[in-house]
Amino acid sequence: MSVVLKIIGGILVALVVAAGLVMTIVPRFLDRIYYRGGETDHYDGARFFNPDGDADTTRTPGGGGRAGFLWRQLTGSDGRPVWPTAVPVAASKPAARIDGDRMVVTWIGHASVLIQTQGLNILTDPVYADRAGPLGFGPKRVAAPGIAFDDLPRIDLVLVSHNHYDHLDQATLKRLWLRDHPQIVTSLGNDSVIGQTGARAMALDWGGNATLTAAGLQDTSTDIRCDPDSWCPGDRARIFITRNHHWGSRWFTDRNRALWSSFVVALPGGGNIFFAGDTGFGDGLWPAEAAAYGPIRFAMIPIGAFRFAPGQMSSGSHVGPAEAALIHQRLGAARSMAIHWGTFRLSYEGYDTPPRMLAAAMRCTGGTGFTAERIGVPFEVPRYVPPVVPPVGFVQLPPVPTRDAILRCLDTPAVKALR
Image 1 (cartoon, rainbow, N blue to C red):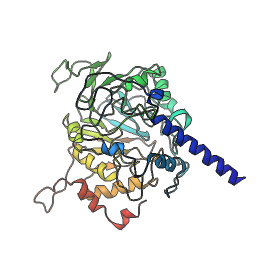
Image 2 (cartoon, helix red, strand yellow):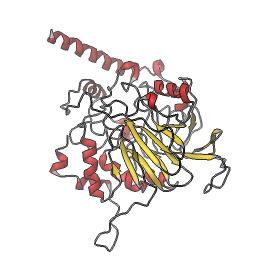
Image 3 (spheres, helix red, strand yellow):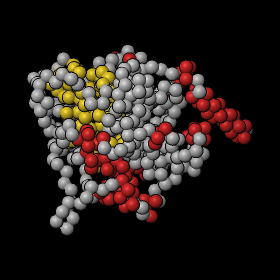
Image 4 (cartoon, rainbow, N blue to C red):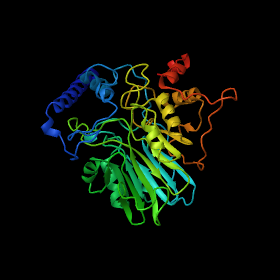
């Protein structure tokens, strides 16, 4: 009987792979037009692209053909370390509001984070789905949400980075919209996907910004009502859409019909918030572009889903811990939290490899303030204080490390043992 079941399972997997391949060559069947506009340095009139190059995001992660990659992902037949089927989560129930300069953060899981400060409840890439994929398929959640949906406080602002299923969950957005009618900010084209739920989102291009006022969101990309260094009466936050390095798709053939982004949230005093969304390293210049909007008190940076072959340290679409440590430093962030790990299995590496490797990478940079936290456990972010870089010999500051320098530093038996 077990042999028969294996044969049947193999046939079903083959059919799924075949269907995926068919969809890539029948674009009219599942293609979607999410956005129309004039050409820019990252939009060719039909699809978006990374201005620093797309070669790393279009090649198959880990090498080999696409059919083989899909087969390995569906079957796990690449010698990957075993993941737990479930991990314990101590879910918490947040306060209704956090007033003043206090900032309380709770990691809900993956890229979903609740930030509470100055009377605002901000939620990033909210995903409460049990699986990260279409039609009930896709990686299954191994960690329950750190805050039950019904225990979420009333949400004021939602940031949606792009349209992949592990970041844009239509069912969750619909529930939030029906319950709270939050203000939703995203990048170009994703408002079309969100709009399918009945929710409304403001979609902006890289470099655009919106201001959250007592009356709601206003697009202030070309119409800042007050001096950029001051705040108008009633302004609660300003959201800047910033560049990162990724891609988007929900149906294979709609690749890059909608834009991907990171975000800076500026608040009236006390330092900014940065949400990296989902990103590869690219040219490595975009963190400094985000930092140009002001000092960053708190950042959320991905560290997982970077390994699709043994020993791989990053992929084109996903930074690994080494590059994440560089991003933290280039942002000049006083405090960063690791996201995009330990919730959905999206790649090869072991369950706890990302945080363990991050700790090693931070030792290589000599920096502080970037850690992995537990799902569901709230923590306070101190008021902004410029990060301290330790001097070398008490004479001069160390040079800013490069990606290659960090990788050389991590070339140790202990790090190599992390699968």
